[in-house]
Length: 526
Image 1 (cartoon, rainbow, N blue to C red):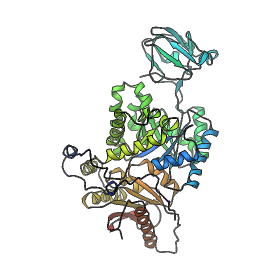
Image 2 (image 1 turned 180 degrees about the vertical axis):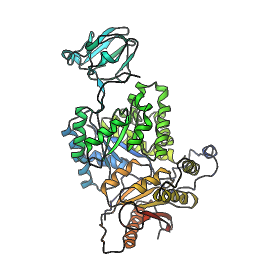
Image 3 (image 1 turned 90 degrees about the vertical axis):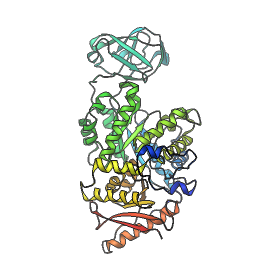
Image 4 (image 1 turned 180 degrees about the horizontal axis):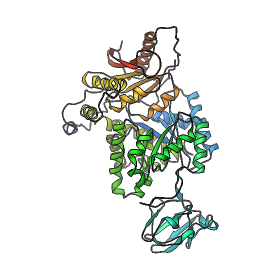
């Protein structure tokens, strides 16, 4: 059996942090009107934290500190760095567990996707004045030596795609250009709508324009094969525009069990969202490019819509980009950033993501601690009973036996003073069904499968524990169930999730294997 000396994702400041109050009856607004700013968070943090690993954190000591602070998923951004570099990240993560055992963390590879970038500039920088007219060229001889007259872009069809009057955004929209003339295969003539200091290799966005680029580039194919070689748990697929993009990625991943999370980053992806959600294992609201491709005042609308639809499907939703960006330089977030993280949690996000904050920022560990505390505060303001009743009405509970059991478990946890739901699972399917109904209490997910334990971090509220004793077919099945249950209780007591006298809901199957979940019991912790 596996047991960690300390828990790396739950910090217990007081008993109230893990003792969940009964959910309120009545409306959400009546509950919110009674919130108290001096109250401590009532429950263990449920929202998972994704950390991008970069130069500041790609070492064993930093990874251990990030895990202690609350990191659940490690992200490797393949837009930067070589396979050799990201292989070192994987190695350092695994070595960190040799030094400091603990709850598993998942490994995620983020693909570059069909993005467009500018070329390099003479001297590495070019100050472009307002109203300056120049050419975005596809001529390869300017790829490494652009300047005021011509700036290279790596999109050969830009002249065929854009017509006069269209806009081009460069460097996260900090340089806005208006197309004056199409030059066919040579590019487009543009006018700068503002002045800007342009640096090498900045992103180029063509809002409200269908780009003629393969959704999965040759580099992406190599990176996806790298994900299989490194036994990654999930890939974050960039710039997904249609469900066929997911199909192509799955073909490359082959029979691996890697999950595919679709990053929605442009107008086309938003409009095709339902079809994409149907095919993907989850979605990411990638607000950086999305906020350039659609008006910034529409981003929160897209965020709320996509997270809500993912919640109704029971698929994980990740909220990403600039969540605590000021903490790359400062030890405290802005008030707006704190509210942004909290509102992502209130919208229903299963995970929140950090990028430069943990890859290259000056305060990576402090940033994770800050995000963890904001998530816990936000979760403690949710009116769980009205939320459950709304989800039950919209989703229903009778699609299959497992879903019925999951719904009943959350209902039991809502109506009785239960401190946790314990799920004995093989593939994590039952735990995912429970998470869909958003219980107030943690979902202690006990599995023999390391992969299941890592991937379950994508779902809000799931707390994985890995039981390493294999089932002996000669032994009675119920004896095996009782052994796993007793061990889960001892682990939960050790990290202050439970105490003697507490009540828990136990979900189990009637026999070995997955797909047989059919039993629910309410038990007291001895």
